[in-house]
Image (tube, rainbow, N blue to C red; front, side, top):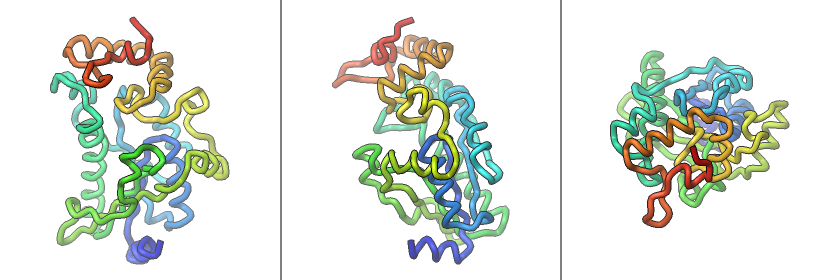
Length: 244
């Protein structure tokens, strides 16, 4: 925390990447206890039709900052159709092209337009979410986004928190998490995420039947499935057990 305080004292801007999920919501509330309000900027990567309806409204009602919305110049399903294949756990173009890329571009422009030097990219990533995430560095200098006139750091403020701590922090802040959690979701990302649990995929299909059909139809069109079991392809319908 000493290094974080130094960055605060140096006037760094803390960019809170907010997806509308529980981790983003808890992270934002936590950041406000550490960082002066004028040094916090909230940014949301709009995923269009593939994100849960109401996410952006939820962010607006649970934050006290202006919310800057960024969007890639392509839609997720259009990207899949053009490539003829879905992203995978090892090659997550959805994250790089639709989330990280637009957010980092926003950070660069925000700092440049205001003559500022230091930016901290804050992400609600937690070690408990997966083995791969547990191996990440919760605080690091982002050399690829830094240059002679710009220093960018990546920080995961709630990296060591448990899921229970996250929900409790939201409750203590006098807020409720996005409605999909109470309705059955374990995590919140795209409605049909390649990393999503069977439970979340089924819930997404029940709540978003039209979008579900678009995914199923696209699998059939491109001849490539979202999932595999071992080396065998598994369709979204087979994964959820919901056939149309």
